[in-house]
Amino acid sequence: MERAQGFAPFIAPDSRLLVLGSFPSVKSRAQGFYYGNPQNRFWRTVCGFFGEEVPADIAGKKAFLLRRKIALWDVVTACEIAGSADASIRGEQLADVAALLAGSAVEAVFCNGKTAYALLQRGAPLPVRTECLPSTSPANPRFRAAVWEDRLRSVFGDT
Image 1: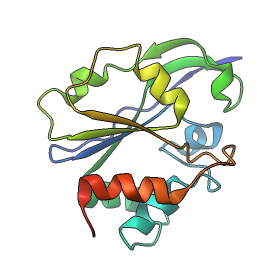
Image 2 (image 1 turned 30 degrees about the horizontal axis):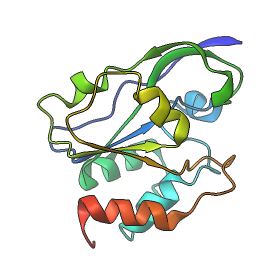
Image 3 (image 1 turned 90 degrees about the horizontal axis):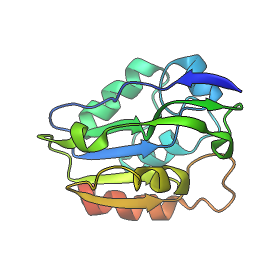
Image 4 (image 1 turned 180 degrees about the vertical axis):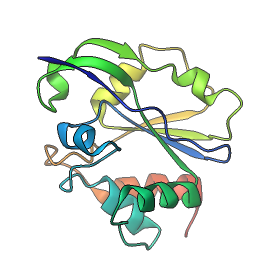
């Protein structure tokens, strides 16, 4: 198992939603940004909700997130992990999500999957609504975009 580092949070002063994953996949770590596996449904789902095409590069993805007021981070900032398997995470360092949210405009936190949600529960309680959504990972056969769209509507309304 390798010891791997996650990413710094991607957040702006006016971000309204924080999406928390568990830990970046091998493909994301190689690319250097969140949800880098083209099979992951995150970008298609969130961009589709806003009626936008998935940006072709990281700069475009960052611009989308800023425009739509979405922040990204992972609950685990560093760990030992075999490949991309959440089940193999060991020796994890947990993100201080409560500190990130202090003084922010974030009004909701969506955990991208059960692992992210369970790990988040180990930290300090958060001052905003926190929900567990179905993982957008290609390994999740029960993913339903409609659940994400409904929850996104609860933050952003009808776009």
